[in-house]
Amino acid sequence: MLECNRFAIQEHRKFLSSVQSYDIRDGDTGEEVGSARENIGGFTQAMRWVVSKNLLPTTVEVREKPDDALVFTIRRGFYVFKSRVEVRDAQGALVGTFRSKFLTISGGFHVYDKDGNYFANVKGRMFGFDYRFLTEDGAVELGRVSKKFMGVGEFVFSADHYFLQVNPDLAGQPLAKMLLLAATLAVDLIYKSESRGGLPLGE
Image (tube, rainbow, N blue to C red; front, side):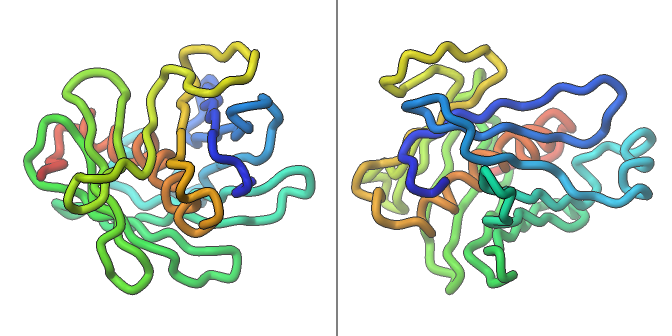
């Protein structure tokens, strides 16, 4: 999965389900390379019908095809003013963290590596689904995610797909791509939900 430099991510929409899941495809060939699915207990699933999901904890497992081996997990605890999201590899070792901003209307969050070093500033727009992953000084774009296909394959995708394009300079850095892919899923699963819930995202 992490050999890809472009990813197409399709959300599954299930009637009367409080659990989100996604297919992950190679953005150039359309081949399904993995999946992402929330793994939450029955109590949390039930609470989502009476409490806003953006206030509750979640764990997302990202698995690779064809054997569904675990690649990494995304974990967030209860929301208290600002989110802290952890990305952990298949062995449970910390890969990086996401920290929500404060009082911004365009969305976005900060990404740090396992040692707490700044990795990327995720910047969104006020409307639409278009995010850029920038270095701290804003000089280099590490990746970009949108609903517009940026690959060169001939596959046609629906509007429910998100497309991640990784900077070619990161082609040989699987941990960097892991953080960018995790951040893309977090945009939809966590930060968009917080924004819809009226809670601060902030700069």
